[in-house]
Image (tube, rainbow, N blue to C red; front, side, top):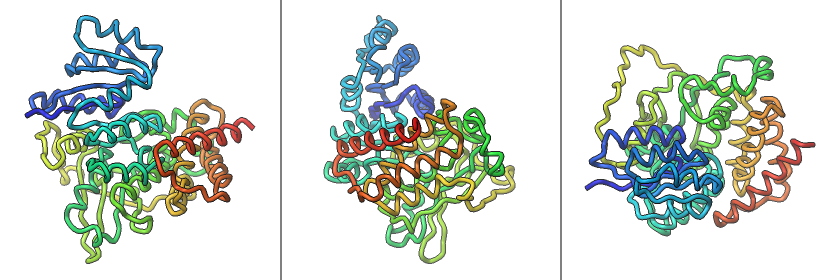
Length: 386
Protein backbone atom coordinates (compact mmCIF):
# COMPACT_ATOMS: atom_id res chain seq x y z
CA UNK A 1 0.00 0.00 0.00
CA UNK A 2 1.25 3.49 -0.84
CA UNK A 3 2.46 5.54 2.10
CA UNK A 4 0.82 8.98 2.30
CA UNK A 5 3.04 12.01 2.71
CA UNK A 6 2.78 15.73 3.45
CA UNK A 7 5.68 18.01 2.50
CA UNK A 8 6.30 21.13 4.57
CA UNK A 9 8.68 23.22 2.50
CA UNK A 10 7.90 21.64 -0.86
CA UNK A 11 9.57 24.32 -3.00
CA UNK A 12 12.90 24.48 -1.14
CA UNK A 13 16.00 22.42 -1.86
CA UNK A 14 14.94 19.49 0.35
CA UNK A 15 11.41 19.70 -1.03
CA UNK A 16 12.64 19.55 -4.62
CA UNK A 17 14.75 16.48 -3.90
CA UNK A 18 11.75 14.89 -2.18
CA UNK A 19 9.65 15.51 -5.29
CA UNK A 20 12.25 13.58 -7.33
CA UNK A 21 12.10 10.65 -4.89
CA UNK A 22 8.29 10.57 -5.00
CA UNK A 23 8.12 10.71 -8.79
CA UNK A 24 10.50 7.76 -8.95
CA UNK A 25 8.25 5.75 -6.59
CA UNK A 26 4.71 6.88 -7.35
CA UNK A 27 3.26 3.48 -6.57
CA UNK A 28 4.74 3.53 -3.06
CA UNK A 29 4.38 7.20 -2.05
CA UNK A 30 1.21 9.31 -2.28
CA UNK A 31 1.08 13.03 -1.48
CA UNK A 32 -1.62 14.42 0.79
CA UNK A 33 -0.53 18.05 1.10
CA UNK A 34 2.26 20.43 0.11
CA UNK A 35 3.28 23.67 1.81
CA UNK A 36 5.35 26.55 0.45
CA UNK A 37 6.34 30.07 1.39
CA UNK A 38 5.06 32.72 -1.02
CA UNK A 39 5.65 31.42 -4.56
CA UNK A 40 2.16 30.42 -5.73
CA UNK A 41 3.23 29.27 -9.20
CA UNK A 42 6.03 27.04 -7.90
CA UNK A 43 3.81 25.41 -5.27
CA UNK A 44 0.96 24.91 -7.74
CA UNK A 45 3.36 23.18 -10.14
CA UNK A 46 4.53 20.84 -7.39
CA UNK A 47 0.96 20.12 -6.25
CA UNK A 48 -0.17 19.29 -9.79
CA UNK A 49 2.89 17.19 -10.52
CA UNK A 50 2.43 15.11 -7.36
CA UNK A 51 -1.36 14.96 -7.40
CA UNK A 52 -1.59 16.52 -3.94
CA UNK A 53 -5.00 16.93 -2.34
CA UNK A 54 -4.23 20.21 -0.56
CA UNK A 55 -1.74 23.05 -1.04
CA UNK A 56 -0.98 25.88 1.37
CA UNK A 57 1.22 28.97 1.29
CA UNK A 58 2.55 30.66 4.42
CA UNK A 59 2.08 34.09 2.80
CA UNK A 60 -1.61 34.93 3.15
CA UNK A 61 -1.32 37.60 0.43
CA UNK A 62 -0.53 34.91 -2.16
CA UNK A 63 -3.70 32.91 -1.50
CA UNK A 64 -5.64 34.23 -4.51
CA UNK A 65 -2.70 33.60 -6.82
CA UNK A 66 -2.48 30.01 -5.58
CA UNK A 67 -6.21 29.43 -6.16
CA UNK A 68 -5.86 30.77 -9.70
CA UNK A 69 -2.80 28.62 -10.39
CA UNK A 70 -4.66 25.51 -9.20
CA UNK A 71 -7.90 26.32 -11.02
CA UNK A 72 -9.43 23.23 -12.63
CA UNK A 73 -7.07 20.82 -10.84
CA UNK A 74 -9.45 19.83 -8.04
CA UNK A 75 -6.70 20.55 -5.51
CA UNK A 76 -7.95 22.48 -2.47
CA UNK A 77 -5.80 25.36 -1.26
CA UNK A 78 -5.32 27.88 1.49
CA UNK A 79 -2.90 30.56 2.67
CA UNK A 80 -1.67 31.95 5.97
CA UNK A 81 -0.75 30.36 9.29
CA UNK A 82 -4.04 28.49 9.72
CA UNK A 83 -3.76 26.89 6.28
CA UNK A 84 -0.18 25.77 6.94
CA UNK A 85 -1.18 24.25 10.28
CA UNK A 86 -4.15 22.55 8.61
CA UNK A 87 -1.83 21.00 6.03
CA UNK A 88 0.56 19.81 8.75
CA UNK A 89 -2.22 18.09 10.70
CA UNK A 90 -3.96 16.40 7.77
CA UNK A 91 -4.13 12.62 7.76
CA UNK A 92 -0.80 11.29 6.48
CA UNK A 93 1.61 8.50 7.32
CA UNK A 94 4.66 10.79 7.22
CA UNK A 95 5.17 14.55 7.37
CA UNK A 96 8.43 15.74 5.85
CA UNK A 97 9.37 18.86 7.83
CA UNK A 98 11.63 20.95 5.59
CA UNK A 99 10.58 24.56 6.23
CA UNK A 100 13.81 26.41 6.91
CA UNK A 101 14.46 28.25 10.17
CA UNK A 102 12.31 28.81 13.23
CA UNK A 103 9.33 29.36 10.89
CA UNK A 104 9.19 25.57 10.58
CA UNK A 105 8.80 24.92 14.31
CA UNK A 106 5.04 25.47 14.73
CA UNK A 107 3.97 23.48 11.63
CA UNK A 108 6.32 20.63 12.53
CA UNK A 109 4.98 20.56 16.08
CA UNK A 110 1.40 20.64 14.76
CA UNK A 111 2.15 17.51 12.73
CA UNK A 112 3.68 15.87 15.80
CA UNK A 113 0.64 16.73 17.97
CA UNK A 114 -1.58 15.16 15.32
CA UNK A 115 0.40 11.93 15.76
CA UNK A 116 2.11 12.02 12.38
CA UNK A 117 5.48 10.35 11.92
CA UNK A 118 8.03 13.11 11.31
CA UNK A 119 10.80 13.02 8.71
CA UNK A 120 12.78 15.90 10.18
CA UNK A 121 14.83 18.26 8.03
CA UNK A 122 14.04 21.35 10.12
CA UNK A 123 16.82 21.34 12.71
CA UNK A 124 15.44 24.42 14.46
CA UNK A 125 12.61 22.30 15.89
CA UNK A 126 15.19 20.59 18.09
CA UNK A 127 17.65 23.47 18.51
CA UNK A 128 14.93 25.86 19.72
CA UNK A 129 12.65 23.49 21.60
CA UNK A 130 14.44 20.16 21.71
CA UNK A 131 13.52 18.98 25.19
CA UNK A 132 9.85 19.97 24.85
CA UNK A 133 9.62 18.65 21.28
CA UNK A 134 11.11 15.26 22.11
CA UNK A 135 9.05 14.97 25.31
CA UNK A 136 5.89 15.44 23.24
CA UNK A 137 7.14 12.88 20.72
CA UNK A 138 7.71 10.30 23.47
CA UNK A 139 4.36 11.04 25.12
CA UNK A 140 2.48 10.66 21.82
CA UNK A 141 4.56 7.73 20.56
CA UNK A 142 5.64 9.67 17.46
CA UNK A 143 8.72 8.48 15.59
CA UNK A 144 11.22 11.16 14.52
CA UNK A 145 13.29 10.17 11.50
CA UNK A 146 16.28 12.41 10.69
CA UNK A 147 16.64 13.66 7.12
CA UNK A 148 19.88 15.65 7.39
CA UNK A 149 22.56 13.49 5.81
CA UNK A 150 24.69 13.58 8.96
CA UNK A 151 21.95 12.59 11.39
CA UNK A 152 20.54 10.03 8.99
CA UNK A 153 24.00 8.44 8.76
CA UNK A 154 24.30 8.45 12.57
CA UNK A 155 20.82 6.95 12.91
CA UNK A 156 21.87 4.05 10.70
CA UNK A 157 25.30 3.65 12.31
CA UNK A 158 23.84 3.66 15.84
CA UNK A 159 21.76 0.62 14.92
CA UNK A 160 25.00 -1.39 15.09
CA UNK A 161 25.10 -1.26 18.89
CA UNK A 162 23.65 0.05 22.12
CA UNK A 163 23.48 3.74 22.98
CA UNK A 164 25.35 3.13 26.22
CA UNK A 165 28.28 1.66 24.29
CA UNK A 166 28.80 4.83 22.22
CA UNK A 167 32.05 6.58 23.06
CA UNK A 168 31.65 9.32 20.46
CA UNK A 169 29.21 10.18 17.68
CA UNK A 170 30.84 12.34 15.03
CA UNK A 171 29.23 14.39 12.29
CA UNK A 172 31.22 15.54 9.30
CA UNK A 173 31.55 18.99 7.74
CA UNK A 174 32.72 19.78 4.24
CA UNK A 175 34.44 22.84 5.68
CA UNK A 176 32.41 25.24 3.54
CA UNK A 177 33.77 27.67 0.94
CA UNK A 178 36.36 29.17 3.31
CA UNK A 179 37.98 25.98 4.58
CA UNK A 180 41.42 26.93 3.20
CA UNK A 181 41.08 30.73 3.48
CA UNK A 182 43.06 32.80 5.96
CA UNK A 183 41.17 34.73 8.64
CA UNK A 184 42.19 37.98 6.97
CA UNK A 185 40.70 36.90 3.67
CA UNK A 186 37.54 35.59 5.32
CA UNK A 187 37.07 38.93 7.09
CA UNK A 188 36.42 40.64 3.76
CA UNK A 189 34.24 37.85 2.31
CA UNK A 190 30.96 38.86 0.71
CA UNK A 191 27.65 37.11 1.29
CA UNK A 192 27.81 35.89 -2.30
CA UNK A 193 31.16 34.21 -1.64
CA UNK A 194 29.89 32.72 1.62
CA UNK A 195 26.84 31.31 -0.17
CA UNK A 196 28.94 29.36 -2.69
CA UNK A 197 28.90 25.97 -0.97
CA UNK A 198 31.49 23.59 -2.46
CA UNK A 199 29.34 20.44 -2.23
CA UNK A 200 25.65 20.94 -1.43
CA UNK A 201 22.97 23.02 -3.15
CA UNK A 202 20.98 24.56 -0.32
CA UNK A 203 19.20 27.77 0.61
CA UNK A 204 21.22 30.96 1.14
CA UNK A 205 20.83 31.03 4.93
CA UNK A 206 21.96 27.42 5.33
CA UNK A 207 24.89 28.08 2.98
CA UNK A 208 25.99 30.99 5.18
CA UNK A 209 25.67 28.77 8.27
CA UNK A 210 27.88 26.23 6.52
CA UNK A 211 30.47 28.92 5.79
CA UNK A 212 30.58 29.94 9.48
CA UNK A 213 30.32 26.30 10.66
CA UNK A 214 27.32 27.34 12.76
CA UNK A 215 25.43 24.69 10.82
CA UNK A 216 27.62 22.00 12.39
CA UNK A 217 27.10 23.47 15.83
CA UNK A 218 23.34 23.41 15.38
CA UNK A 219 23.61 19.82 14.17
CA UNK A 220 25.45 18.86 17.39
CA UNK A 221 22.55 20.30 19.41
CA UNK A 222 20.10 18.43 17.19
CA UNK A 223 22.03 15.16 17.61
CA UNK A 224 21.97 15.61 21.39
CA UNK A 225 18.16 15.60 21.35
CA UNK A 226 17.68 13.01 18.61
CA UNK A 227 19.97 10.38 20.08
CA UNK A 228 20.14 11.26 23.77
CA UNK A 229 23.90 11.80 23.69
CA UNK A 230 25.65 14.25 26.02
CA UNK A 231 27.83 17.07 24.65
CA UNK A 232 31.04 15.21 25.56
CA UNK A 233 29.98 12.28 23.38
CA UNK A 234 29.44 14.44 20.28
CA UNK A 235 32.00 15.90 17.91
CA UNK A 236 32.63 17.38 14.45
CA UNK A 237 35.33 16.52 11.92
CA UNK A 238 36.00 18.26 8.61
CA UNK A 239 35.79 15.94 5.60
CA UNK A 240 35.98 17.89 2.30
CA UNK A 241 34.91 15.01 0.05
CA UNK A 242 31.54 14.72 1.86
CA UNK A 243 31.39 10.95 1.40
CA UNK A 244 31.41 9.96 5.07
CA UNK A 245 28.44 11.68 6.72
CA UNK A 246 28.53 10.34 10.25
CA UNK A 247 30.63 8.01 12.39
CA UNK A 248 30.04 6.21 15.67
CA UNK A 249 33.06 5.26 17.73
CA UNK A 250 32.27 2.45 20.17
CA UNK A 251 33.83 1.83 23.58
CA UNK A 252 35.74 -1.17 22.20
CA UNK A 253 37.51 1.05 19.64
CA UNK A 254 35.48 -0.04 16.62
CA UNK A 255 33.94 2.60 14.33
CA UNK A 256 30.73 2.33 12.31
CA UNK A 257 30.34 4.92 9.55
CA UNK A 258 27.63 5.97 7.12
CA UNK A 259 28.91 6.64 3.59
CA UNK A 260 27.09 7.85 0.48
CA UNK A 261 27.57 10.19 -2.42
CA UNK A 262 26.47 13.73 -1.46
CA UNK A 263 22.91 13.58 -2.76
CA UNK A 264 20.03 14.44 -0.42
CA UNK A 265 17.73 12.00 -2.19
CA UNK A 266 19.54 9.17 -0.37
CA UNK A 267 18.71 10.21 3.23
CA UNK A 268 15.26 11.48 2.16
CA UNK A 269 14.34 8.09 0.73
CA UNK A 270 15.64 6.38 3.86
CA UNK A 271 13.58 8.65 6.13
CA UNK A 272 10.37 8.32 4.11
CA UNK A 273 10.46 4.52 4.24
CA UNK A 274 12.27 4.13 7.54
CA UNK A 275 13.92 0.70 7.77
CA UNK A 276 12.48 -0.18 4.33
CA UNK A 277 14.99 0.88 1.69
CA UNK A 278 13.69 2.19 -1.61
CA UNK A 279 15.62 1.27 -4.77
CA UNK A 280 17.21 4.48 -6.06
CA UNK A 281 18.46 5.03 -9.60
CA UNK A 282 21.51 7.02 -8.51
CA UNK A 283 25.25 6.68 -9.17
CA UNK A 284 26.90 4.17 -6.87
CA UNK A 285 29.75 5.04 -4.52
CA UNK A 286 33.05 3.96 -6.12
CA UNK A 287 35.76 4.35 -3.51
CA UNK A 288 38.48 3.18 -5.88
CA UNK A 289 37.55 5.96 -8.31
CA UNK A 290 37.49 8.54 -5.51
CA UNK A 291 40.85 7.23 -4.32
CA UNK A 292 41.28 9.29 -1.18
CA UNK A 293 39.17 10.45 1.76
CA UNK A 294 40.67 13.18 3.94
CA UNK A 295 39.83 14.45 7.42
CA UNK A 296 40.95 17.37 9.58
CA UNK A 297 39.97 19.06 12.81
CA UNK A 298 37.77 22.15 12.47
CA UNK A 299 39.59 25.44 13.12
CA UNK A 300 37.47 27.12 15.78
CA UNK A 301 39.68 30.23 15.67
CA UNK A 302 38.74 30.96 12.07
CA UNK A 303 35.21 29.63 12.62
CA UNK A 304 34.16 30.77 16.12
CA UNK A 305 30.46 30.05 15.54
CA UNK A 306 31.19 26.37 16.11
CA UNK A 307 32.64 27.16 19.54
CA UNK A 308 29.62 29.31 20.38
CA UNK A 309 27.23 26.48 19.50
CA UNK A 310 29.23 23.97 21.55
CA UNK A 311 29.14 26.35 24.50
CA UNK A 312 25.37 26.76 24.12
CA UNK A 313 24.91 22.98 24.13
CA UNK A 314 27.04 22.61 27.25
CA UNK A 315 25.25 25.50 28.99
CA UNK A 316 21.86 23.98 28.23
CA UNK A 317 18.69 25.69 29.38
CA UNK A 318 17.41 28.16 26.80
CA UNK A 319 20.87 29.00 25.47
CA UNK A 320 20.49 26.96 22.24
CA UNK A 321 17.20 28.78 21.58
CA UNK A 322 18.90 32.15 22.12
CA UNK A 323 21.91 31.18 20.01
CA UNK A 324 19.75 30.14 17.07
CA UNK A 325 17.57 33.26 17.18
CA UNK A 326 20.57 35.59 17.34
CA UNK A 327 22.23 33.72 14.50
CA UNK A 328 19.20 34.02 12.21
CA UNK A 329 19.09 37.80 12.75
CA UNK A 330 22.86 38.22 12.33
CA UNK A 331 22.94 36.10 9.15
CA UNK A 332 20.07 38.14 7.68
CA UNK A 333 22.00 41.35 8.46
CA UNK A 334 25.12 39.91 6.81
CA UNK A 335 23.18 38.86 3.71
CA UNK A 336 21.72 42.38 3.52
CA UNK A 337 25.24 43.87 3.62
CA UNK A 338 24.80 45.56 7.00
CA UNK A 339 27.52 43.67 8.87
CA UNK A 340 30.68 41.70 8.05
CA UNK A 341 31.31 37.97 8.17
CA UNK A 342 32.90 37.90 11.62
CA UNK A 343 30.24 40.24 12.95
CA UNK A 344 27.89 37.25 12.83
CA UNK A 345 29.76 35.46 15.61
CA UNK A 346 30.37 38.76 17.45
CA UNK A 347 26.67 39.60 17.70
CA UNK A 348 25.64 36.02 18.48
CA UNK A 349 28.12 35.96 21.36
CA UNK A 350 26.90 39.33 22.65
CA UNK A 351 23.27 38.23 22.63
CA UNK A 352 24.06 34.95 24.36
CA UNK A 353 26.11 36.82 26.98
CA UNK A 354 23.27 39.26 27.60
CA UNK A 355 21.00 36.36 28.59
CA UNK A 356 23.59 34.17 30.33
CA UNK A 357 23.41 35.96 33.68
CA UNK A 358 19.71 35.20 33.95
CA UNK A 359 20.22 31.42 33.59
CA UNK A 360 17.13 31.12 31.39
CA UNK A 361 15.52 27.71 31.90
CA UNK A 362 14.94 25.40 28.97
CA UNK A 363 11.53 26.09 27.41
CA UNK A 364 8.96 23.65 28.79
CA UNK A 365 6.73 23.98 25.72
CA UNK A 366 7.08 24.99 22.08
CA UNK A 367 5.15 28.18 22.90
CA UNK A 368 7.71 29.01 25.58
CA UNK A 369 10.50 28.44 23.06
CA UNK A 370 8.92 30.85 20.60
CA UNK A 371 8.64 33.53 23.31
CA UNK A 372 12.33 33.18 24.17
CA UNK A 373 13.16 33.13 20.46
CA UNK A 374 11.32 36.42 19.99
CA UNK A 375 13.11 38.06 22.92
CA UNK A 376 16.51 36.95 21.61
CA UNK A 377 15.72 38.22 18.12
CA UNK A 378 14.73 41.61 19.47
CA UNK A 379 17.96 41.75 21.48
CA UNK A 380 19.96 40.93 18.35
CA UNK A 381 18.16 43.58 16.31
CA UNK A 382 18.84 46.22 18.96
CA UNK A 383 22.54 45.39 19.12
CA UNK A 384 22.98 45.36 15.36
CA UNK A 385 21.04 48.58 14.77
CA UNK A 386 23.05 50.30 17.51
